[in-house]
Image (cartoon, rainbow, N blue to C red; front, top):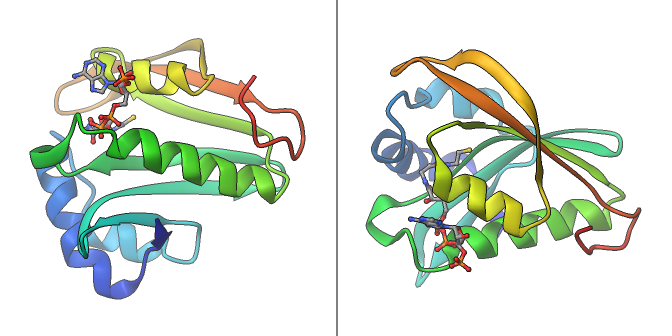
Length: 147
Ligand SMILES: CC(C)(COP(=O)(O)OP(=O)(O)OC[C@H]1O[C@@H](n2cnc3c(N)ncnc32)[C@H](O)[C@@H]1OP(=O)(O)O)[C@@H](O)C(=O)NCCC(=O)NCCS
């Protein structure tokens, strides 16, 4: 796992367009490079990314995907764990995200890392229109371990 750079954007947008029904445009990634985006490389190939918006001790996952060609091989697990650990080491202890109600794979991954369903945002997503499940997790400060 390493920090996302401008040179990664074409690979990132390529994965984004294959991983989501309503992908972010390249400009959206350019606009948030100043935040805390990470990419995952396997054998020098970019295979996924995760983006957070962090304010003080709180971080929200804005986007997260693994290349569809290699999903189901533990890469999402690795990237989520190591990015959460990196933010926990910086004192982050409240984590939130939105996930499509139908996206059971992602919900299971988040639950495995300690996230709980907190509520529903009705018709939050487009293409197709769908509710979002809001999930959250609180860590003991600087522990690096999920509760
Ligand atoms: C969600 C995503 C990031 C997971 O990455 P991945 O590399 O495929 O997942 P992993 O192989 O690391 O699996 C980790 C855990 O996720 C869950 N999971 C992954 N694929 C699953 C599937 N098809 N069905 C059920 N659970 C699944 C399991 O809990 C799994 O842990 P386990 O192997 O111990 O059971 C990836 O599938 C993806 O990019 N999906 C499309 C984009 C997306 O939905 N992003 C999240 C938006 S909120």
